View 1 (cartoon, helix red, strand yellow):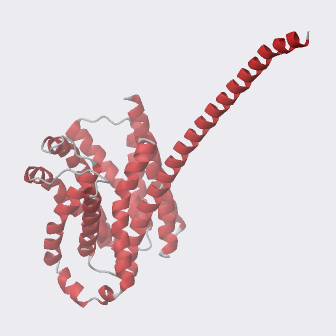
View 2 (view 1 turned 135 degrees about the vertical axis):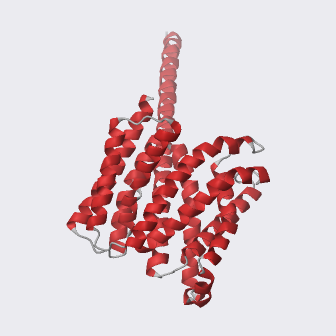
Length: 346
Protein backbone atom coordinates (compact mmCIF):
# COMPACT_ATOMS: atom_id res chain seq x y z
CA UNK A 1 0.00 0.00 0.00
CA UNK A 2 2.86 2.32 0.87
CA UNK A 3 4.67 1.51 -2.38
CA UNK A 4 1.45 2.03 -4.37
CA UNK A 5 0.89 5.46 -2.74
CA UNK A 6 4.51 6.41 -3.44
CA UNK A 7 4.16 5.43 -7.10
CA UNK A 8 0.88 7.33 -7.25
CA UNK A 9 2.62 10.46 -5.97
CA UNK A 10 5.36 10.39 -8.64
CA UNK A 11 3.21 11.59 -11.58
CA UNK A 12 1.92 14.41 -9.39
CA UNK A 13 5.48 15.41 -8.45
CA UNK A 14 6.55 15.28 -12.12
CA UNK A 15 3.61 17.47 -13.12
CA UNK A 16 4.47 19.91 -10.36
CA UNK A 17 8.10 19.99 -11.52
CA UNK A 18 7.01 20.56 -15.12
CA UNK A 19 4.78 23.41 -14.02
CA UNK A 20 7.57 24.97 -12.00
CA UNK A 21 10.03 24.52 -14.89
CA UNK A 22 7.55 26.08 -17.30
CA UNK A 23 6.96 28.96 -14.93
CA UNK A 24 10.72 29.50 -14.57
CA UNK A 25 11.16 29.45 -18.36
CA UNK A 26 8.38 32.02 -18.74
CA UNK A 27 9.95 34.20 -16.05
CA UNK A 28 13.33 33.93 -17.77
CA UNK A 29 11.79 34.84 -21.13
CA UNK A 30 9.96 37.78 -19.55
CA UNK A 31 13.16 38.96 -17.82
CA UNK A 32 15.11 38.65 -21.09
CA UNK A 33 12.44 40.68 -22.93
CA UNK A 34 12.53 43.37 -20.24
CA UNK A 35 16.34 43.51 -20.45
CA UNK A 36 16.16 43.81 -24.25
CA UNK A 37 13.62 46.64 -24.03
CA UNK A 38 15.67 48.43 -21.36
CA UNK A 39 18.81 48.00 -23.48
CA UNK A 40 17.08 49.51 -26.53
CA UNK A 41 15.72 52.41 -24.45
CA UNK A 42 19.13 52.96 -22.85
CA UNK A 43 20.84 52.95 -26.26
CA UNK A 44 18.28 55.42 -27.63
CA UNK A 45 18.61 57.66 -24.58
CA UNK A 46 22.41 57.50 -24.61
CA UNK A 47 22.67 58.18 -28.34
CA UNK A 48 20.16 61.05 -28.04
CA UNK A 49 22.10 62.64 -25.19
CA UNK A 50 25.38 62.23 -27.09
CA UNK A 51 23.88 63.89 -30.18
CA UNK A 52 22.37 66.79 -28.20
CA UNK A 53 25.53 67.41 -26.15
CA UNK A 54 27.88 67.29 -29.15
CA UNK A 55 25.72 69.57 -31.34
CA UNK A 56 25.17 72.12 -28.54
CA UNK A 57 28.80 72.05 -27.43
CA UNK A 58 30.09 72.56 -30.98
CA UNK A 59 28.15 75.82 -31.43
CA UNK A 60 28.97 77.11 -27.93
CA UNK A 61 32.70 76.38 -28.30
CA UNK A 62 32.79 78.04 -31.74
CA UNK A 63 31.15 81.08 -30.15
CA UNK A 64 33.75 80.98 -27.38
CA UNK A 65 36.63 80.91 -29.88
CA UNK A 66 35.24 83.61 -32.17
CA UNK A 67 33.77 86.02 -29.60
CA UNK A 68 35.25 85.44 -26.15
CA UNK A 69 38.76 84.85 -27.47
CA UNK A 70 38.04 87.42 -30.21
CA UNK A 71 39.66 85.20 -32.85
CA UNK A 72 39.34 87.02 -36.18
CA UNK A 73 40.20 84.13 -38.50
CA UNK A 74 37.01 82.14 -39.01
CA UNK A 75 38.24 80.49 -42.22
CA UNK A 76 41.41 79.29 -40.49
CA UNK A 77 39.27 77.83 -37.70
CA UNK A 78 37.16 75.98 -40.29
CA UNK A 79 40.26 74.60 -42.04
CA UNK A 80 41.73 73.39 -38.74
CA UNK A 81 38.45 71.69 -37.72
CA UNK A 82 38.10 70.02 -41.12
CA UNK A 83 41.73 68.84 -41.00
CA UNK A 84 41.04 67.15 -37.64
CA UNK A 85 38.00 65.42 -39.15
CA UNK A 86 40.04 64.17 -42.14
CA UNK A 87 42.81 62.82 -39.88
CA UNK A 88 40.42 61.01 -37.49
CA UNK A 89 38.22 59.52 -40.25
CA UNK A 90 41.32 58.41 -42.22
CA UNK A 91 42.77 56.68 -39.13
CA UNK A 92 39.46 54.93 -38.35
CA UNK A 93 39.15 53.85 -41.99
CA UNK A 94 42.75 52.56 -42.04
CA UNK A 95 42.11 50.52 -38.86
CA UNK A 96 38.97 49.02 -40.43
CA UNK A 97 36.63 50.46 -37.80
CA UNK A 98 34.61 52.32 -40.45
CA UNK A 99 34.35 51.95 -44.22
CA UNK A 100 34.86 54.84 -46.65
CA UNK A 101 34.85 55.15 -50.41
CA UNK A 102 38.19 55.88 -52.12
CA UNK A 103 38.43 59.45 -53.45
CA UNK A 104 38.57 59.03 -57.23
CA UNK A 105 38.88 61.89 -59.72
CA UNK A 106 35.41 61.05 -61.13
CA UNK A 107 33.86 61.35 -57.68
CA UNK A 108 35.71 64.62 -56.97
CA UNK A 109 34.43 66.16 -60.23
CA UNK A 110 30.83 65.23 -59.39
CA UNK A 111 31.11 66.42 -55.78
CA UNK A 112 33.01 69.69 -56.33
CA UNK A 113 29.92 71.97 -56.79
CA UNK A 114 28.44 70.59 -53.54
CA UNK A 115 31.74 71.15 -51.74
CA UNK A 116 32.02 74.79 -52.84
CA UNK A 117 28.58 75.45 -51.30
CA UNK A 118 29.59 73.41 -48.22
CA UNK A 119 32.66 75.62 -47.65
CA UNK A 120 30.58 78.79 -48.14
CA UNK A 121 28.03 77.46 -45.67
CA UNK A 122 30.68 76.82 -42.98
CA UNK A 123 32.45 80.15 -43.48
CA UNK A 124 29.28 82.27 -43.36
CA UNK A 125 28.22 80.33 -40.25
CA UNK A 126 31.54 81.23 -38.57
CA UNK A 127 31.27 84.91 -39.55
CA UNK A 128 27.66 85.27 -38.37
CA UNK A 129 28.33 83.49 -35.06
CA UNK A 130 31.08 85.98 -34.27
CA UNK A 131 28.64 88.92 -34.33
CA UNK A 132 25.24 87.44 -33.37
CA UNK A 133 24.28 85.72 -30.12
CA UNK A 134 23.62 81.97 -30.18
CA UNK A 135 19.86 82.25 -29.53
CA UNK A 136 19.28 84.62 -32.47
CA UNK A 137 21.48 82.52 -34.76
CA UNK A 138 19.30 79.53 -33.85
CA UNK A 139 16.08 81.42 -34.63
CA UNK A 140 17.42 82.96 -37.86
CA UNK A 141 18.52 79.51 -39.07
CA UNK A 142 14.79 78.67 -39.29
CA UNK A 143 14.70 80.84 -42.43
CA UNK A 144 16.70 78.04 -44.07
CA UNK A 145 13.62 75.80 -43.78
CA UNK A 146 11.55 78.40 -45.65
CA UNK A 147 14.07 78.66 -48.51
CA UNK A 148 14.46 74.86 -48.66
CA UNK A 149 10.67 74.35 -48.79
CA UNK A 150 10.36 76.83 -51.66
CA UNK A 151 13.30 75.17 -53.44
CA UNK A 152 11.74 71.72 -53.05
CA UNK A 153 8.47 73.02 -54.45
CA UNK A 154 10.04 74.56 -57.59
CA UNK A 155 12.86 72.04 -58.21
CA UNK A 156 11.25 68.76 -57.17
CA UNK A 157 7.51 69.60 -57.30
CA UNK A 158 7.20 68.71 -53.62
CA UNK A 159 3.80 69.41 -52.09
CA UNK A 160 3.66 70.88 -48.56
CA UNK A 161 0.41 70.92 -46.61
CA UNK A 162 -1.11 73.89 -44.77
CA UNK A 163 0.47 72.93 -41.42
CA UNK A 164 3.97 73.12 -42.90
CA UNK A 165 3.30 76.51 -44.50
CA UNK A 166 1.77 77.81 -41.25
CA UNK A 167 4.87 76.82 -39.28
CA UNK A 168 7.13 78.39 -41.93
CA UNK A 169 5.13 81.61 -41.70
CA UNK A 170 5.58 81.59 -37.90
CA UNK A 171 9.33 81.15 -38.42
CA UNK A 172 9.51 84.23 -40.65
CA UNK A 173 7.49 86.31 -38.13
CA UNK A 174 9.75 85.19 -35.24
CA UNK A 175 12.93 85.95 -37.21
CA UNK A 176 11.72 89.47 -38.08
CA UNK A 177 10.44 90.24 -34.57
CA UNK A 178 13.61 88.77 -33.07
CA UNK A 179 15.80 90.98 -35.25
CA UNK A 180 13.78 94.11 -34.47
CA UNK A 181 13.94 93.51 -30.70
CA UNK A 182 17.57 92.27 -30.64
CA UNK A 183 19.46 94.55 -28.19
CA UNK A 184 22.81 93.38 -29.60
CA UNK A 185 21.76 93.73 -33.26
CA UNK A 186 24.72 93.71 -35.68
CA UNK A 187 24.00 94.41 -39.38
CA UNK A 188 27.15 92.62 -40.59
CA UNK A 189 26.32 89.52 -38.56
CA UNK A 190 22.75 89.45 -39.84
CA UNK A 191 23.99 89.81 -43.44
CA UNK A 192 26.32 86.82 -42.98
CA UNK A 193 23.50 84.80 -41.40
CA UNK A 194 21.08 85.52 -44.27
CA UNK A 195 23.81 84.42 -46.70
CA UNK A 196 24.29 81.29 -44.56
CA UNK A 197 20.56 80.47 -44.78
CA UNK A 198 20.65 80.61 -48.59
CA UNK A 199 23.87 78.56 -48.78
CA UNK A 200 22.58 75.94 -46.30
CA UNK A 201 19.35 75.55 -48.28
CA UNK A 202 21.36 75.39 -51.54
CA UNK A 203 23.61 72.71 -50.04
CA UNK A 204 20.61 70.59 -49.03
CA UNK A 205 18.92 70.94 -52.45
CA UNK A 206 22.15 70.42 -54.45
CA UNK A 207 23.08 67.40 -52.34
CA UNK A 208 19.72 65.85 -53.15
CA UNK A 209 20.38 66.26 -56.88
CA UNK A 210 24.03 65.19 -56.87
CA UNK A 211 23.75 62.21 -54.50
CA UNK A 212 22.43 59.72 -57.09
CA UNK A 213 25.13 60.68 -59.61
CA UNK A 214 27.81 60.47 -56.92
CA UNK A 215 26.70 56.94 -55.94
CA UNK A 216 27.02 55.82 -59.57
CA UNK A 217 30.71 56.79 -59.75
CA UNK A 218 31.72 55.06 -56.49
CA UNK A 219 33.14 51.54 -56.48
CA UNK A 220 30.47 50.13 -54.15
CA UNK A 221 27.59 52.08 -55.68
CA UNK A 222 26.93 53.72 -52.32
CA UNK A 223 28.09 56.79 -50.39
CA UNK A 224 27.74 56.53 -46.62
CA UNK A 225 27.97 59.32 -44.03
CA UNK A 226 31.65 58.67 -43.28
CA UNK A 227 32.58 58.87 -46.97
CA UNK A 228 30.68 62.16 -47.27
CA UNK A 229 32.50 63.55 -44.21
CA UNK A 230 35.87 62.53 -45.64
CA UNK A 231 35.01 63.81 -49.12
CA UNK A 232 33.64 67.18 -47.98
CA UNK A 233 36.38 67.89 -45.46
CA UNK A 234 39.26 66.78 -47.73
CA UNK A 235 38.06 68.88 -50.67
CA UNK A 236 37.45 71.86 -48.38
CA UNK A 237 41.13 72.07 -47.33
CA UNK A 238 42.69 73.46 -50.56
CA UNK A 239 39.75 75.84 -51.09
CA UNK A 240 39.91 76.94 -47.45
CA UNK A 241 43.67 77.59 -47.62
CA UNK A 242 43.14 79.66 -50.77
CA UNK A 243 40.46 81.73 -49.00
CA UNK A 244 42.81 82.30 -46.02
CA UNK A 245 45.10 84.18 -48.41
CA UNK A 246 42.21 85.93 -50.22
CA UNK A 247 40.80 87.28 -46.92
CA UNK A 248 44.34 88.05 -45.71
CA UNK A 249 44.02 85.97 -42.55
CA UNK A 250 47.72 85.09 -42.86
CA UNK A 251 48.68 88.57 -41.67
CA UNK A 252 46.36 88.29 -38.66
CA UNK A 253 47.63 84.79 -37.80
CA UNK A 254 51.24 86.01 -37.83
CA UNK A 255 50.41 88.78 -35.32
CA UNK A 256 47.85 87.27 -32.92
CA UNK A 257 49.19 86.11 -29.51
CA UNK A 258 46.35 83.55 -29.25
CA UNK A 259 48.32 80.94 -31.23
CA UNK A 260 50.94 80.84 -28.47
CA UNK A 261 48.32 79.83 -25.85
CA UNK A 262 48.05 76.04 -25.27
CA UNK A 263 44.51 76.48 -23.89
CA UNK A 264 43.42 78.15 -27.13
CA UNK A 265 44.78 75.25 -29.21
CA UNK A 266 43.04 72.82 -26.86
CA UNK A 267 39.67 74.59 -27.30
CA UNK A 268 40.10 74.71 -31.09
CA UNK A 269 40.98 71.01 -31.19
CA UNK A 270 37.95 70.11 -29.07
CA UNK A 271 35.76 72.07 -31.49
CA UNK A 272 37.17 70.01 -34.38
CA UNK A 273 36.55 66.72 -32.58
CA UNK A 274 32.99 67.82 -31.72
CA UNK A 275 32.34 68.66 -35.37
CA UNK A 276 33.09 65.06 -36.26
CA UNK A 277 31.24 63.77 -33.19
CA UNK A 278 28.03 65.36 -34.50
CA UNK A 279 28.25 63.17 -37.62
CA UNK A 280 28.88 60.00 -35.60
CA UNK A 281 26.27 60.65 -32.90
CA UNK A 282 23.60 61.74 -35.40
CA UNK A 283 24.07 58.45 -37.29
CA UNK A 284 23.96 56.48 -34.02
CA UNK A 285 20.83 58.29 -32.79
CA UNK A 286 19.09 57.94 -36.16
CA UNK A 287 19.85 54.20 -36.16
CA UNK A 288 18.55 53.73 -32.60
CA UNK A 289 15.32 55.71 -33.08
CA UNK A 290 14.26 56.88 -36.54
CA UNK A 291 13.83 59.97 -38.69
CA UNK A 292 10.74 61.13 -36.77
CA UNK A 293 12.34 61.17 -33.31
CA UNK A 294 15.61 62.50 -34.72
CA UNK A 295 13.86 65.46 -36.37
CA UNK A 296 11.81 66.31 -33.28
CA UNK A 297 14.75 66.06 -30.86
CA UNK A 298 16.83 68.23 -33.21
CA UNK A 299 14.17 70.95 -32.95
CA UNK A 300 13.73 70.61 -29.18
CA UNK A 301 17.52 70.67 -28.73
CA UNK A 302 17.60 74.31 -29.87
CA UNK A 303 15.73 75.42 -26.73
CA UNK A 304 18.44 74.51 -24.15
CA UNK A 305 21.10 75.66 -26.65
CA UNK A 306 19.51 79.13 -26.85
CA UNK A 307 19.15 79.40 -23.07
CA UNK A 308 22.77 78.28 -22.56
CA UNK A 309 23.96 80.79 -25.16
CA UNK A 310 22.19 83.67 -23.41
CA UNK A 311 23.40 82.70 -19.92
CA UNK A 312 27.00 81.71 -20.72
CA UNK A 313 27.79 84.75 -22.85
CA UNK A 314 25.72 87.18 -20.74
CA UNK A 315 23.67 88.36 -23.71
CA UNK A 316 21.60 91.52 -23.05
CA UNK A 317 17.99 90.72 -23.77
CA UNK A 318 14.47 92.01 -23.21
CA UNK A 319 11.09 90.40 -22.65
CA UNK A 320 10.11 91.15 -26.27
CA UNK A 321 13.29 89.57 -27.67
CA UNK A 322 13.07 86.53 -25.37
CA UNK A 323 9.44 86.03 -26.42
CA UNK A 324 10.43 86.23 -30.11
CA UNK A 325 13.19 83.67 -29.58
CA UNK A 326 10.85 81.28 -27.74
CA UNK A 327 8.21 81.82 -30.44
CA UNK A 328 10.77 80.93 -33.12
CA UNK A 329 11.95 77.82 -31.29
CA UNK A 330 8.38 76.57 -30.84
CA UNK A 331 7.71 77.29 -34.52
CA UNK A 332 10.67 74.97 -35.27
CA UNK A 333 9.11 72.20 -33.17
CA UNK A 334 5.74 72.80 -34.88
CA UNK A 335 7.49 72.55 -38.27
CA UNK A 336 9.15 69.23 -37.31
CA UNK A 337 5.78 67.79 -36.22
CA UNK A 338 4.08 69.02 -39.41
CA UNK A 339 6.78 67.37 -41.54
CA UNK A 340 6.38 64.16 -39.54
CA UNK A 341 2.63 64.11 -40.24
CA UNK A 342 3.29 64.70 -43.94
CA UNK A 343 5.74 61.76 -44.03
CA UNK A 344 3.31 59.43 -42.20
CA UNK A 345 0.48 60.33 -44.60
CA UNK A 346 2.65 59.71 -47.68
